[in-house]
Image (cartoon, rainbow over all chains, first blue to last red; front, top):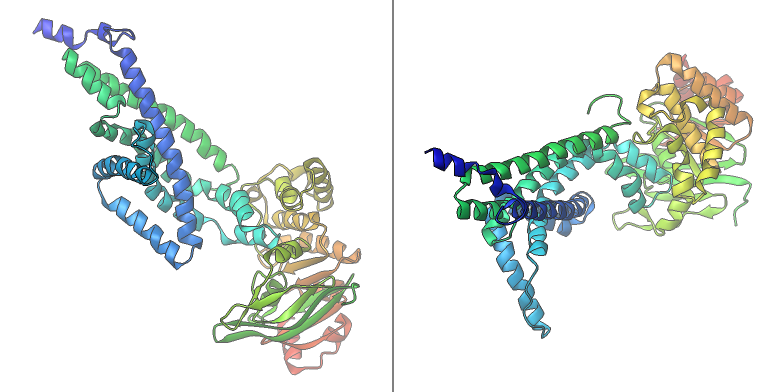
Length: 243
Length: 257
């Protein structure tokens, strides 16, 4: 019993260099971060496009956006990840074959960012659509009345003015993105959860490694919360009252 | 070509909202330096008329000419009009300084940022020059000390004065005021009217939709009484308020006093 608890918390297993697994874990953590940041940013871009499409687009574009957000939000993320990851890379290779280019090995990180981005995009479309609608119409009207082009209105007035309304929803999405990266473990991408499982499996120190991974996820969330707080205060500096 | 001493010429403007015809052929000419007050009851179409001038509302028919340049319009296919050249509309809008009833200052910018926004980002003026002009305008409307304050931390009267500075910053050919004091508490109306009155004295071309009859009488060079979408009566303020001809205007003036 004493021996097993000693292996359970043998901290030398967390050493950065082999035979310790610390370096592997940190590499996995960095990979998770890259996935989260990349996927989140792609999701934001898709979300801005989706929200504008839904609010200002013609009937066909609006319907397309509706199909996108409904489908993505209806299907479990795990299924989407399996589908987009395998079917997506397959589709790219088939497309390349049409142009006579042989199959390529698609970078796991790029595919992962794409998958998380597409999922996040559907949710941020809705967050941003709601936030844009919350901007007092007079703000946008004044911008138009002073000769701003639609793009300039968007960039100088609509987007900054909607931020206070969007940030609570967008921060949620960021925290979800950091944890959605763990789903990429099922397709064999070496992010934090997958390397933790490998480390735990080969050393049998399950408790320690999963707790170590948990601490890394928690640290990411805590740091994120501080950053979100700063961004939120900054975006609301023009507001006399809480939203 | 139209006489360029004409700052603004609107001819035969119609505006329909569905089956409701709000403007039934309104024409108006403002020469440079004219201060035209548009009065009328609620639902008379006076605000709609003002908003048609810079195409915040698209007229159903009619023609708008600013400083000799007519806004080119085409049919929208539903019995109305739409601008055929969006760039032209954007350019003409930068010559019309609009002041709104509810100020519509950009809440995420400080007062000074509001004032220099259009000069810098639409007119392409160098920032330091825009700041110099903006600060001078804020000094003029008595808000220099508030230049780094966000609008929602100011009173309505201060916000409206800031909005007037924003309109002046584009050096407009015509100022458009859409009931500039209607959203203000009574004790704040005076400070805004003083600023507008000063602008009238220096012969700025202004179209002023207002409920302040005494003010309209004092500052305007010409008064237009709008009723049910048509000009019921117009003329110099002394004549319109002192000797109204139409029954409706008589009733309107007596109902105000």
